[in-house]
Amino acid sequence: MTEAAQSTVQPEALQLQRRFDATPSQLYRSFTEAAHLVEWFGPEGVSCKTERFEAHKGGSYEITFFNPDGSEVGLVGRFLQLEKPRLIQMTWRWQRPDETEPDEETLVTIRLAGAGSGTRLELTHERFGTVSERDRHETGWSSSFGCLDEALSQAKRAQGVRREAKNVSASHRSCPDSRHTPRIRPHRARIAR
Image 1 (cartoon, rainbow, N blue to C red):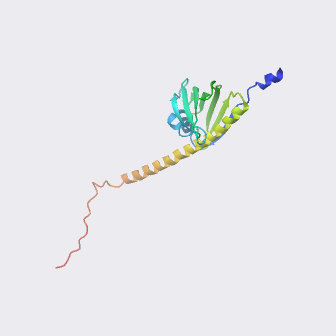
Image 2: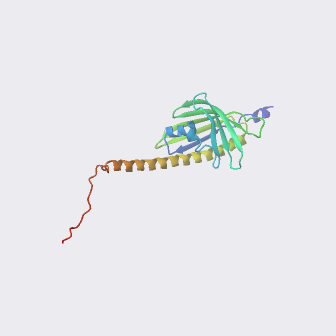
Image 3: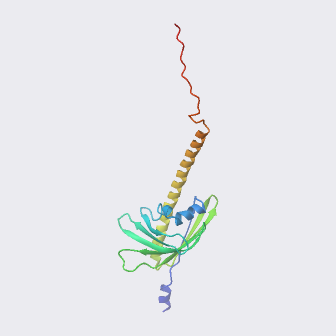
């Protein structure tokens, strides 16, 4: 009897830490604003769209993932805690079209803290039914964080390009407007007659 009870004990929670070259506010927006989330969320090669995304305490979300093989899977949950820019806690439940019973609901907690010029992200994903389910999520989150890192890098590069364009524009503003520039008449050599 004791052995059977031990075998039903919930597996350890998944815990991941990663440092990102972004501010806590930027990372917070990456998780809580649908326009940012769809740029990176999901493992490499997987895209997603938000069907519903109400990022406030008690708000719900529904996301559809599109796998490279053409299959789709849904993810639903609700936001339990949001403390900008340091904490996100939400429920997480897969909805697979080929299964009659939805997956068990799990819990995701994301903590963000400044770390030098970047941010340390600590993810805890818990309440898994099996160790193999936890391990699959570790693979998925790790790949997703690689996608998030790339999305943040692209945004940073784009911001640098915008900053350079703004600087060029500002330097042109210090030049006189062409309407106020005196006309320069071309030099005409006098021809002796």
